[in-house]
Amino acid sequence: FGQPAGGGAFGQQGQAQGQFGQNAQNQQVSFYDIPGVPDDTISSLAWAKQGFVLACGSWDNSVRVWEIQTSNMPPFYNAIQRCKYDHAAPVLCVAWQDDSTALFSSSVDGEVKMYQIQSQQAKTVGKHDRGARFVYWVQELNCIVSGGWDGRVRFWQGQPNPVADVQLPERIFAMDVKFPVMVAATADHKVHIWNLQNLAQNSNPLRSIQMPNLKMQTRCLTLFPDKAGYAAGSVEGRCTIAWLEQQNPQRPGETRNFAFKCHRITPPGKQAGADDEIYPVSSIDFHPQMGTFATGGDDGTFVFWDKENKQRLKVFDSIKVPITCVKFSPDGSTFACATGYDWHKGHQGNTGQVPTKILLMKVDPENVKPKPKTAPTQPGRR
Image (tube, rainbow, N blue to C red; front, side):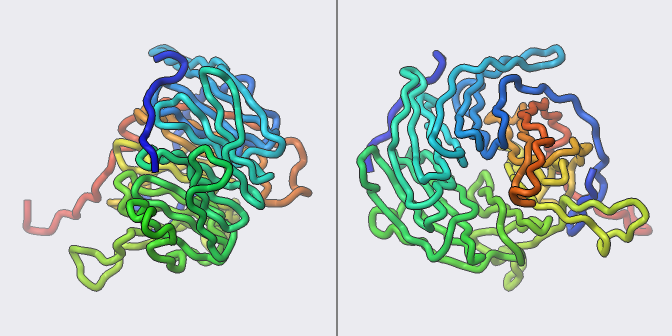
């Protein structure tokens, strides 16, 4: 693969239950509501690595980009739309080039596009036989990676044909790339794991395994910041935490993997657990510095978690509509979430009454800081 380029852009209420601690309290927060968002569901959010810039892809076929200005006084943010371009079909994923000079997007018709920020020109750089569900830029390989509903993972470098093409046995429903690790979850409940350092010798997965601890369809997947494992969420209101090396180094023979319930609501007067309303986990994202993570669900809540200490850090009041995406800014100071109809009830559930929004929230460091469990005091000891 070729060499990377350089440059810049724009100039320089639910009850969560499971193995996690239960000491977090619901918290009300104030949001900044970005103006001029699409009318239809937002499928993807992506922060640029350089500059405070946010992109979204939507089912209205559009990709939009805002420059986010910050202030120390409420409302703390001001969003200015900088550009917009369209696909011929609903957009499923957006991703930035590392230097923020280009944006990549993929859509339901299988098209993968590259948009140059300075020239504001878009061109097709890849194609799938079915929907192109995911797209990523891999700086270390100087290439675009896309994963589709045709079960293919393809690597593009500007030519009409991919430089590498991997056929998986089923459709790709969740995926993430953090070089040298790439992980894809498919419709047959498998997880496929690559070491991209070996791509030139062998483009096939290093290994393929059953998705740990999830019984139903995988909805989202995100690699840990240290790339040692991944968090995945399913339609059954459950998350799994899985390490690439599953054995616990402190306890030989014992796996480190575990799962927990989340985004479930117990209706008033009903029995917790047995009568819970269960909602899909729509999105997961890790805080870039703290290593803690957020989940967003169709119950309208987002929650911060600490996987290392199995603690639920903070529960935020429900915003009453499904959350389709969550994303921390690269500096960890801002949390973005998108709301809208998420299609889990099909076409008949789309009443047009669910508002599409992108909300920004200042992150309180105390809410994302890992909190080790406090050991109980033993009698007779100080």
